[in-house]
View 1: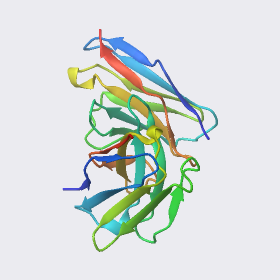
View 2: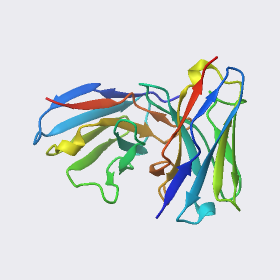
View 3: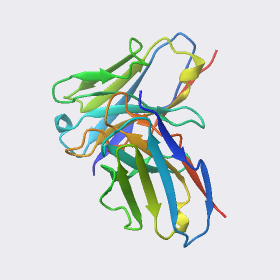
View 4: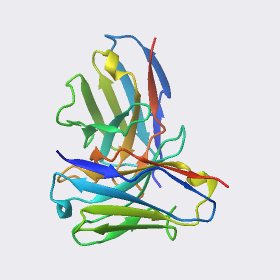
Amino acid sequence: DIQMTQSPSTLSASVGDRVTITCRASQSISSWLAWYQQKPGKAPNLLIYKASSLESGVPSRFSGSGSGTEFTLTVSSLQPDDFATYYCQQYNSYPYTFGQGTKLEIK
Amino acid sequence: QVQLVQSGAEVKKPGASVKVSCKASGYTFTTYAIHWVRQAPGQRLEWMGWINSGNDNTEYSQKFQGRVTITRDTSATTGYMELSSLRSEDTAVYYCARPRYGDSAAFDIWGQGTMVTVSS
């Protein structure tokens, strides 16, 4: 199975900050990577697909980059609604796997 | 609007089976796959498998092979996930999810989740 590792696991930041979350795959997944935001008690919400494509309706402050084994999700200017947990997911090969999550907290 | 609506919470005893449903609406059911993903309390998301709603082909994570069965009923526009030989570690929220059009498994539509509790 492809292991997905996110860093950091927890990130404390303030409104207006620029933050970056990293996701590393244990082997190359080309650009078959998605990013999700999840709030407590809710289903995940797709932000980015194919590593860098912004899902319709998602604010442009979210961006994704990378290919192969290293990927990043950047939020250019944090808004109050952005404090949540973020997951990366590879869909290059079965079984599709997710990172352990990055909890973005208010500093 | 496009949505997936899942069946309600379940409490099961170890060794029992559970079947969760996922009713699709707002789109052509047979055009999109249905995937199943679970999340144990405080844990990461875990992909279980998927079904091609058009031709009934399935693919399962090897972790669940032999215990999970994913089916669909096109007339009811509903997908199903059945998990057997339940153990306490299967306690989780189970989600169905639909991939974006033209994308294999970036999930843009999710069900609301079904909590399955396995306890004696």
